[in-house]
Amino acid sequence: MAIIPQLELFSWEEIEPLGDLERLRLVLEHLPDEALMAHLEKSRGHGRDDYPVRAMWNSMLAGIVFQHPSIESLRRELSRNGQLRSICGLRAVPSAAAYTRFLRSLMRHGSWIESMFDELVKALSEELPEFGRRLAMDSKAIASWASRPSKEKKEDGRRDLDAAYGVKTYRGTREDGSTWEKVVRWFGYKLHLVVDAQHELPVAYTVTKGSRSDVKEGHVLLDEMEKRHPEMLKKAEVLTADRGYDDSKLLSRCWDEYGIKPVIDTRRMWKDGEQTRLLPGHTNVVYDEGGAVYCYCPETGARQQMSNGGFEKDRGTLKKVCPAKAYGITCQGREQCPVAGGVRVALAVDRRIFTPIARESYKWAKEYRYRTAVERVNSRLDVSFGFERHTIRGLRKMRIRCGLALCVMLAMALGRVREKQQERMRSLVRSVS
Image (cartoon, rainbow, N blue to C red; front, side, top):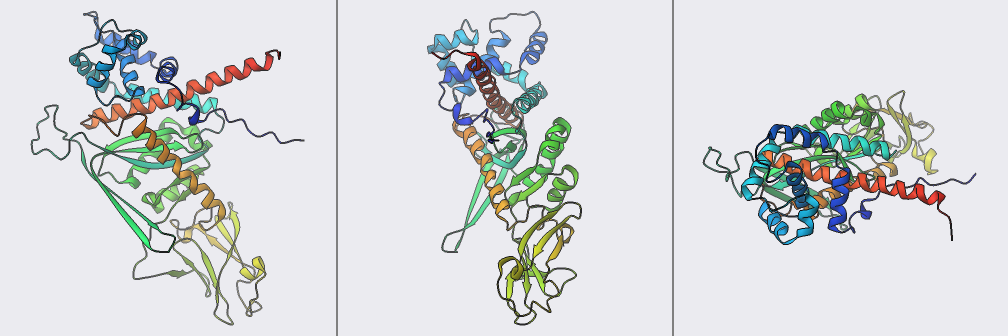
């Protein structure tokens, strides 16, 4: 029978060309905010209602969709755009003080925004069967609106007493073999993300000071997913991340606790110029920090890289095949070689280096390319959601702003998925003229 390829129900590229009003419509119609709105209205009581809660909320969402860097920028847009005021439900442009009070109210209800995020993730998981199978993890630097730490320790709304200096170092190798290094420093915060690498959508996040370690927060992200989305951890098959998450405990936890194959690049941590180490139990087999395994010919002393033979899940071992057997090369000492039939390398030899997917395999390289999905999500946060130009100071405000942006991103995706399904269902019964 013919193999029918799986239909792609969502692609972010379908959202980016849409106009601002169409994006706002997707958000307003598909964001699960009714519980939050009812709670805020109840908390407000029966006082004056010049600027209704729902209208203020809709305008805040419009500010995110329309990429306004500040409340004043949003207010100017509302003052000249009567159609936008009508869509939001506003009779007049709210004052700056009204937005300040509303934002303070939202900061007191940050857990409700986290609940909305979780509900959107669950809804997308139900709509997209592959959602969550391939995950990627990374952090994003977000500078504070304040440029440096304040000497004053008293909060007055103008200082940022929560931010801290962060540093990220990027290293690589050029085509000519030379190495390069780039160090990025900033004063502010970090947004730590786990995203679905296929659809480029967030599934978990935390916001911390800029000095927070990526590895430590990686464990926190797994804790949050275990608490909020245990079904997704059961579904996930692969987790990719850069070398900033190279940690034996994190790698072991992915596989031992959740059955997720970690594809995380290694840092070079061996000291004193050490290039290889002897594989335990063998006299002529060594391995390097990149996970490659080599055997030495007992006759000539020539070194050859052993071939990958797959992963044995029940044994917890990687099979490495004799290069003479795998590639048909000539080995003068094959007859007396103790590893002529190959070797098994237990993951326990070094959990940081040996993982269920062999590091030097084509499959590892293919899976590692999915890590760039996080970079594209980070880029959209900067360009499409205004984090390149913002006026945010304080950790609570940053958490609210990041949570809202990620909820808007998911709501757009959910709306696009649901509406495409409806159109496809209609097309099945539409007559052809």
